[in-house]
Image (tube, one colour):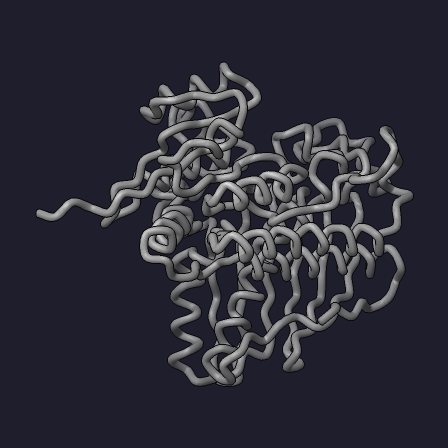
Length: 398
Protein backbone atom coordinates (compact mmCIF):
# COMPACT_ATOMS: atom_id res chain seq x y z
CA UNK A 1 0.00 0.00 0.00
CA UNK A 2 1.25 3.53 -0.74
CA UNK A 3 2.36 5.59 2.23
CA UNK A 4 -0.10 8.10 3.63
CA UNK A 5 0.82 11.76 3.09
CA UNK A 6 2.59 13.07 6.18
CA UNK A 7 1.57 16.27 8.00
CA UNK A 8 3.59 17.37 11.02
CA UNK A 9 2.05 19.65 13.64
CA UNK A 10 3.79 21.82 16.20
CA UNK A 11 1.48 22.33 19.18
CA UNK A 12 1.76 25.65 21.01
CA UNK A 13 -0.06 25.41 24.32
CA UNK A 14 -0.86 22.35 26.39
CA UNK A 15 -4.21 23.10 27.99
CA UNK A 16 -7.85 22.10 27.46
CA UNK A 17 -8.16 22.87 23.74
CA UNK A 18 -4.73 21.35 23.03
CA UNK A 19 -6.00 18.11 24.57
CA UNK A 20 -9.09 18.28 22.35
CA UNK A 21 -6.96 18.84 19.24
CA UNK A 22 -4.64 15.97 20.17
CA UNK A 23 -7.61 13.59 20.36
CA UNK A 24 -8.84 14.99 17.06
CA UNK A 25 -5.46 14.52 15.36
CA UNK A 26 -5.54 10.87 16.38
CA UNK A 27 -8.92 10.53 14.62
CA UNK A 28 -7.78 11.92 11.23
CA UNK A 29 -7.99 9.35 8.44
CA UNK A 30 -6.08 9.09 5.16
CA UNK A 31 -3.04 11.00 6.42
CA UNK A 32 -0.09 10.35 8.70
CA UNK A 33 -0.60 13.14 11.23
CA UNK A 34 1.99 13.62 13.93
CA UNK A 35 2.41 16.21 16.65
CA UNK A 36 6.20 16.38 16.58
CA UNK A 37 6.72 18.97 19.33
CA UNK A 38 4.82 20.90 21.98
CA UNK A 39 5.69 24.27 23.50
CA UNK A 40 4.30 25.77 26.69
CA UNK A 41 5.40 28.37 29.19
CA UNK A 42 5.02 25.58 31.75
CA UNK A 43 7.68 22.97 30.96
CA UNK A 44 6.02 20.63 33.43
CA UNK A 45 2.63 20.88 31.69
CA UNK A 46 4.22 20.44 28.27
CA UNK A 47 6.11 17.37 29.48
CA UNK A 48 2.96 15.81 30.89
CA UNK A 49 1.12 16.53 27.64
CA UNK A 50 3.95 15.07 25.55
CA UNK A 51 4.01 11.87 27.57
CA UNK A 52 0.25 11.46 27.27
CA UNK A 53 0.30 11.81 23.48
CA UNK A 54 3.66 10.29 22.58
CA UNK A 55 5.17 13.59 21.41
CA UNK A 56 8.95 13.35 21.07
CA UNK A 57 10.02 16.94 21.78
CA UNK A 58 9.12 19.52 24.42
CA UNK A 59 9.98 23.24 24.29
CA UNK A 60 9.47 26.16 26.65
CA UNK A 61 9.88 28.66 23.79
CA UNK A 62 7.41 28.45 20.91
CA UNK A 63 10.00 29.97 18.55
CA UNK A 64 11.84 26.65 18.65
CA UNK A 65 8.79 25.12 16.95
CA UNK A 66 8.66 27.89 14.34
CA UNK A 67 12.32 27.26 13.50
CA UNK A 68 11.86 23.54 12.89
CA UNK A 69 11.94 22.60 9.18
CA UNK A 70 9.87 19.46 9.82
CA UNK A 71 6.84 21.40 11.16
CA UNK A 72 4.19 21.99 8.48
CA UNK A 73 1.53 23.66 10.61
CA UNK A 74 1.39 25.23 14.07
CA UNK A 75 -1.67 24.83 16.26
CA UNK A 76 -2.20 27.91 18.44
CA UNK A 77 -3.95 26.77 21.61
CA UNK A 78 -2.95 29.87 23.55
CA UNK A 79 -4.68 32.85 25.21
CA UNK A 80 -6.46 35.28 22.89
CA UNK A 81 -3.97 38.11 23.32
CA UNK A 82 -1.23 35.98 21.73
CA UNK A 83 -3.14 35.03 18.57
CA UNK A 84 -2.09 37.97 16.37
CA UNK A 85 1.62 38.04 17.25
CA UNK A 86 2.05 34.28 17.02
CA UNK A 87 0.12 34.10 13.74
CA UNK A 88 2.32 36.79 12.20
CA UNK A 89 5.49 35.05 13.37
CA UNK A 90 4.30 31.65 12.19
CA UNK A 91 3.33 33.01 8.77
CA UNK A 92 6.72 34.71 8.43
CA UNK A 93 8.31 31.33 9.20
CA UNK A 94 6.29 29.74 6.38
CA UNK A 95 4.04 27.68 8.64
CA UNK A 96 0.34 27.09 8.14
CA UNK A 97 -1.67 28.18 11.19
CA UNK A 98 -4.53 26.64 13.13
CA UNK A 99 -6.01 29.24 15.47
CA UNK A 100 -8.46 28.45 18.26
CA UNK A 101 -11.54 30.62 18.72
CA UNK A 102 -11.93 33.55 18.80
CA UNK A 103 -9.54 34.48 16.00
CA UNK A 104 -8.38 37.47 18.05
CA UNK A 105 -9.59 40.00 20.60
CA UNK A 106 -8.85 43.34 22.24
CA UNK A 107 -7.05 42.72 25.54
CA UNK A 108 -5.58 46.11 26.25
CA UNK A 109 -2.91 46.81 23.66
CA UNK A 110 -1.60 50.34 24.24
CA UNK A 111 -3.29 50.77 27.62
CA UNK A 112 -1.45 51.54 30.83
CA UNK A 113 -1.16 48.62 33.29
CA UNK A 114 -4.15 48.39 35.57
CA UNK A 115 -6.48 50.21 33.17
CA UNK A 116 -10.20 49.87 33.91
CA UNK A 117 -11.66 48.07 30.89
CA UNK A 118 -15.16 49.13 31.88
CA UNK A 119 -14.19 52.69 30.96
CA UNK A 120 -12.56 51.89 27.62
CA UNK A 121 -14.43 52.91 24.46
CA UNK A 122 -16.10 49.87 22.92
CA UNK A 123 -15.83 51.56 19.52
CA UNK A 124 -12.06 51.72 20.01
CA UNK A 125 -12.05 48.06 20.99
CA UNK A 126 -13.96 47.18 17.81
CA UNK A 127 -11.45 49.06 15.68
CA UNK A 128 -8.46 47.44 17.41
CA UNK A 129 -9.89 43.91 17.31
CA UNK A 130 -10.75 44.13 13.60
CA UNK A 131 -7.28 45.57 12.89
CA UNK A 132 -5.77 42.55 14.65
CA UNK A 133 -7.89 40.17 12.58
CA UNK A 134 -7.11 41.96 9.32
CA UNK A 135 -3.39 41.84 10.13
CA UNK A 136 -3.56 38.09 10.73
CA UNK A 137 -5.38 37.45 7.45
CA UNK A 138 -2.92 39.68 5.57
CA UNK A 139 0.12 37.99 7.12
CA UNK A 140 -1.10 34.56 5.99
CA UNK A 141 -1.91 35.80 2.49
CA UNK A 142 1.51 37.43 2.10
CA UNK A 143 3.23 34.23 3.14
CA UNK A 144 0.94 32.01 1.01
CA UNK A 145 0.00 29.88 4.01
CA UNK A 146 -3.42 28.88 5.33
CA UNK A 147 -4.90 30.65 8.34
CA UNK A 148 -7.40 28.07 9.59
CA UNK A 149 -10.03 29.20 12.08
CA UNK A 150 -10.89 26.31 14.40
CA UNK A 151 -14.63 26.96 14.78
CA UNK A 152 -15.92 23.50 15.58
CA UNK A 153 -19.60 24.39 15.03
CA UNK A 154 -18.88 24.82 11.32
CA UNK A 155 -17.83 21.15 11.23
CA UNK A 156 -20.31 19.70 13.73
CA UNK A 157 -22.33 16.92 12.01
CA UNK A 158 -25.69 18.61 12.77
CA UNK A 159 -24.52 21.86 11.11
CA UNK A 160 -22.98 19.99 8.16
CA UNK A 161 -26.26 18.13 7.64
CA UNK A 162 -28.23 21.36 7.99
CA UNK A 163 -26.13 22.97 5.26
CA UNK A 164 -26.90 20.03 2.96
CA UNK A 165 -30.60 20.24 3.78
CA UNK A 166 -30.63 23.97 3.04
CA UNK A 167 -28.98 23.33 -0.32
CA UNK A 168 -31.37 20.48 -1.14
CA UNK A 169 -34.45 22.52 -0.20
CA UNK A 170 -33.67 25.42 -2.49
CA UNK A 171 -35.23 27.61 0.18
CA UNK A 172 -34.08 30.94 1.57
CA UNK A 173 -32.68 31.16 5.10
CA UNK A 174 -34.91 33.82 6.65
CA UNK A 175 -33.91 33.57 10.30
CA UNK A 176 -31.58 31.67 12.61
CA UNK A 177 -31.70 31.43 16.40
CA UNK A 178 -28.88 29.88 18.36
CA UNK A 179 -26.84 30.00 21.50
CA UNK A 180 -24.36 28.35 23.79
CA UNK A 181 -24.87 28.32 27.55
CA UNK A 182 -23.58 26.67 30.70
CA UNK A 183 -23.05 27.45 34.39
CA UNK A 184 -19.69 29.22 34.07
CA UNK A 185 -16.13 28.66 32.93
CA UNK A 186 -13.73 26.82 35.22
CA UNK A 187 -10.93 29.25 34.38
CA UNK A 188 -10.38 32.30 36.62
CA UNK A 189 -8.90 34.07 33.59
CA UNK A 190 -12.33 34.05 31.93
CA UNK A 191 -13.51 36.63 34.45
CA UNK A 192 -11.22 39.47 33.29
CA UNK A 193 -11.19 41.42 30.02
CA UNK A 194 -7.40 41.77 29.98
CA UNK A 195 -7.04 38.00 29.61
CA UNK A 196 -9.95 37.17 27.30
CA UNK A 197 -11.06 40.32 25.45
CA UNK A 198 -14.69 39.82 26.42
CA UNK A 199 -17.15 37.66 28.32
CA UNK A 200 -19.94 35.31 27.34
CA UNK A 201 -20.44 36.79 23.86
CA UNK A 202 -16.79 36.31 22.93
CA UNK A 203 -16.22 33.07 24.80
CA UNK A 204 -19.50 31.29 23.95
CA UNK A 205 -21.41 33.43 21.45
CA UNK A 206 -18.70 33.12 18.82
CA UNK A 207 -19.92 29.56 18.17
CA UNK A 208 -23.46 30.36 17.02
CA UNK A 209 -22.21 33.56 15.35
CA UNK A 210 -19.61 31.53 13.43
CA UNK A 211 -22.17 28.92 12.39
CA UNK A 212 -24.66 31.54 11.20
CA UNK A 213 -22.06 33.48 9.23
CA UNK A 214 -20.84 30.20 7.72
CA UNK A 215 -24.32 29.09 6.64
CA UNK A 216 -25.13 32.46 5.08
CA UNK A 217 -21.73 32.41 3.38
CA UNK A 218 -22.50 29.00 1.90
CA UNK A 219 -26.01 30.07 0.85
CA UNK A 220 -24.62 33.13 -0.91
CA UNK A 221 -21.94 31.15 -2.72
CA UNK A 222 -24.55 28.68 -3.98
CA UNK A 223 -27.05 31.31 -5.05
CA UNK A 224 -24.93 34.24 -6.22
CA UNK A 225 -21.27 33.13 -6.22
CA UNK A 226 -20.36 35.34 -3.25
CA UNK A 227 -20.96 35.21 0.52
CA UNK A 228 -23.92 36.85 2.21
CA UNK A 229 -22.23 38.73 5.03
CA UNK A 230 -23.49 40.43 8.22
CA UNK A 231 -24.47 44.09 7.77
CA UNK A 232 -25.54 45.35 11.21
CA UNK A 233 -25.77 44.33 14.86
CA UNK A 234 -27.83 45.33 17.87
CA UNK A 235 -27.06 43.86 21.29
CA UNK A 236 -27.47 43.75 25.06
CA UNK A 237 -25.07 42.31 27.64
CA UNK A 238 -24.59 42.19 31.40
CA UNK A 239 -23.63 40.16 34.46
CA UNK A 240 -26.62 38.16 35.69
CA UNK A 241 -24.91 37.42 39.00
CA UNK A 242 -25.51 41.10 39.80
CA UNK A 243 -29.26 40.52 39.65
CA UNK A 244 -30.99 41.76 42.82
CA UNK A 245 -31.20 38.94 45.35
CA UNK A 246 -28.65 36.63 43.74
CA UNK A 247 -25.98 37.19 46.41
CA UNK A 248 -28.54 36.40 49.11
CA UNK A 249 -28.88 32.82 47.88
CA UNK A 250 -27.29 30.32 50.26
CA UNK A 251 -26.39 27.75 47.57
CA UNK A 252 -25.11 29.20 44.32
CA UNK A 253 -24.36 26.70 41.58
CA UNK A 254 -23.72 29.33 38.92
CA UNK A 255 -20.21 30.66 38.33
CA UNK A 256 -19.59 34.14 39.71
CA UNK A 257 -16.76 36.56 40.36
CA UNK A 258 -16.95 38.25 36.95
CA UNK A 259 -14.62 41.23 37.23
CA UNK A 260 -15.31 43.32 34.12
CA UNK A 261 -16.83 41.00 31.52
CA UNK A 262 -20.42 39.98 30.86
CA UNK A 263 -21.83 36.63 31.98
CA UNK A 264 -24.76 37.02 29.55
CA UNK A 265 -25.27 38.59 26.14
CA UNK A 266 -27.57 38.60 23.12
CA UNK A 267 -27.14 39.81 19.54
CA UNK A 268 -29.47 40.41 16.62
CA UNK A 269 -27.56 40.21 13.34
CA UNK A 270 -28.95 41.67 10.12
CA UNK A 271 -27.44 40.14 6.99
CA UNK A 272 -26.94 41.81 3.63
CA UNK A 273 -29.99 40.07 2.18
CA UNK A 274 -32.26 41.21 5.02
CA UNK A 275 -32.34 37.89 6.89
CA UNK A 276 -31.75 37.85 10.66
CA UNK A 277 -29.80 35.89 13.24
CA UNK A 278 -30.57 35.91 16.97
CA UNK A 279 -27.66 34.84 19.19
CA UNK A 280 -27.53 34.31 22.94
CA UNK A 281 -24.72 33.32 25.27
CA UNK A 282 -24.85 32.74 29.00
CA UNK A 283 -22.61 31.58 31.84
CA UNK A 284 -25.66 31.35 34.12
CA UNK A 285 -27.51 28.26 32.88
CA UNK A 286 -27.67 25.00 34.86
CA UNK A 287 -28.01 21.49 33.46
CA UNK A 288 -24.80 21.09 31.47
CA UNK A 289 -23.69 22.57 28.17
CA UNK A 290 -26.37 23.78 25.76
CA UNK A 291 -25.40 24.31 22.12
CA UNK A 292 -28.36 24.80 19.80
CA UNK A 293 -29.21 26.32 16.44
CA UNK A 294 -32.62 26.67 14.76
CA UNK A 295 -32.81 27.55 11.08
CA UNK A 296 -36.03 28.91 9.59
CA UNK A 297 -36.26 28.62 5.81
CA UNK A 298 -38.88 29.86 3.39
CA UNK A 299 -39.92 26.21 2.95
CA UNK A 300 -38.53 24.29 5.94
CA UNK A 301 -37.28 24.39 9.52
CA UNK A 302 -34.12 22.68 10.82
CA UNK A 303 -33.10 22.18 14.44
CA UNK A 304 -29.51 21.37 15.44
CA UNK A 305 -28.28 20.22 18.84
CA UNK A 306 -24.54 19.88 19.39
CA UNK A 307 -24.66 19.06 23.11
CA UNK A 308 -27.61 16.89 24.19
CA UNK A 309 -27.56 14.20 21.52
CA UNK A 310 -30.37 12.17 23.07
CA UNK A 311 -28.60 8.90 22.26
CA UNK A 312 -28.20 7.97 25.95
CA UNK A 313 -30.37 8.82 28.96
CA UNK A 314 -29.25 7.79 32.44
CA UNK A 315 -30.60 8.12 35.97
CA UNK A 316 -28.72 7.89 39.25
CA UNK A 317 -30.13 8.51 42.74
CA UNK A 318 -26.74 9.81 43.87
CA UNK A 319 -23.81 11.36 42.03
CA UNK A 320 -21.59 8.66 43.55
CA UNK A 321 -23.13 6.08 41.21
CA UNK A 322 -21.39 7.49 38.10
CA UNK A 323 -18.54 9.16 39.99
CA UNK A 324 -15.82 7.50 37.89
CA UNK A 325 -17.41 8.08 34.47
CA UNK A 326 -17.52 11.27 32.38
CA UNK A 327 -21.06 12.26 31.43
CA UNK A 328 -21.04 15.61 29.63
CA UNK A 329 -19.34 18.99 29.64
CA UNK A 330 -20.19 21.45 32.45
CA UNK A 331 -22.73 19.15 34.13
CA UNK A 332 -23.08 20.35 37.74
CA UNK A 333 -24.15 17.01 39.29
CA UNK A 334 -24.23 13.37 38.25
CA UNK A 335 -27.36 12.74 40.31
CA UNK A 336 -30.79 12.51 38.67
CA UNK A 337 -31.44 12.22 34.93
CA UNK A 338 -28.64 13.10 32.51
CA UNK A 339 -27.73 12.72 28.83
CA UNK A 340 -24.28 11.12 28.82
CA UNK A 341 -22.41 11.92 25.62
CA UNK A 342 -21.19 8.81 23.75
CA UNK A 343 -18.66 10.93 21.80
CA UNK A 344 -18.75 14.61 22.66
CA UNK A 345 -15.84 15.53 20.38
CA UNK A 346 -17.61 13.98 17.37
CA UNK A 347 -20.96 15.64 18.09
CA UNK A 348 -19.29 19.04 18.44
CA UNK A 349 -17.22 18.65 15.27
CA UNK A 350 -13.69 18.65 16.67
CA UNK A 351 -12.29 15.64 14.72
CA UNK A 352 -13.84 17.05 11.54
CA UNK A 353 -11.99 20.36 12.11
CA UNK A 354 -8.61 18.65 12.11
CA UNK A 355 -9.56 16.39 9.19
CA UNK A 356 -10.34 19.41 7.02
CA UNK A 357 -7.28 21.36 8.14
CA UNK A 358 -4.89 18.46 7.55
CA UNK A 359 -6.35 17.93 4.07
CA UNK A 360 -5.97 21.67 3.37
CA UNK A 361 -2.29 21.60 4.32
CA UNK A 362 -1.64 18.38 2.39
CA UNK A 363 -3.49 19.36 -0.80
CA UNK A 364 -3.17 23.14 -0.86
CA UNK A 365 -6.93 23.78 -1.00
CA UNK A 366 -8.61 26.38 1.19
CA UNK A 367 -10.17 25.21 4.48
CA UNK A 368 -13.90 25.48 5.01
CA UNK A 369 -13.39 27.70 8.08
CA UNK A 370 -10.72 30.29 7.29
CA UNK A 371 -9.28 33.50 8.66
CA UNK A 372 -11.83 35.66 6.86
CA UNK A 373 -14.70 33.89 8.60
CA UNK A 374 -12.91 34.35 11.92
CA UNK A 375 -12.40 38.03 11.12
CA UNK A 376 -16.13 38.57 10.43
CA UNK A 377 -17.02 36.81 13.68
CA UNK A 378 -14.72 39.15 15.63
CA UNK A 379 -16.24 42.21 13.95
CA UNK A 380 -19.79 41.01 14.64
CA UNK A 381 -19.19 40.34 18.34
CA UNK A 382 -17.32 43.59 18.98
CA UNK A 383 -19.98 45.54 17.10
CA UNK A 384 -22.33 43.96 19.63
CA UNK A 385 -20.26 45.38 22.47
CA UNK A 386 -20.49 48.83 20.87
CA UNK A 387 -24.25 48.47 20.45
CA UNK A 388 -24.76 47.39 24.05
CA UNK A 389 -22.61 50.22 25.41
CA UNK A 390 -24.02 52.98 23.22
CA UNK A 391 -27.61 51.81 22.89
CA UNK A 392 -28.00 51.78 19.12
CA UNK A 393 -27.71 49.58 16.04
CA UNK A 394 -24.17 49.35 14.69
CA UNK A 395 -23.49 49.15 10.96
CA UNK A 396 -20.53 46.96 9.98
CA UNK A 397 -17.72 48.25 7.80
CA UNK A 398 -17.30 46.96 4.26
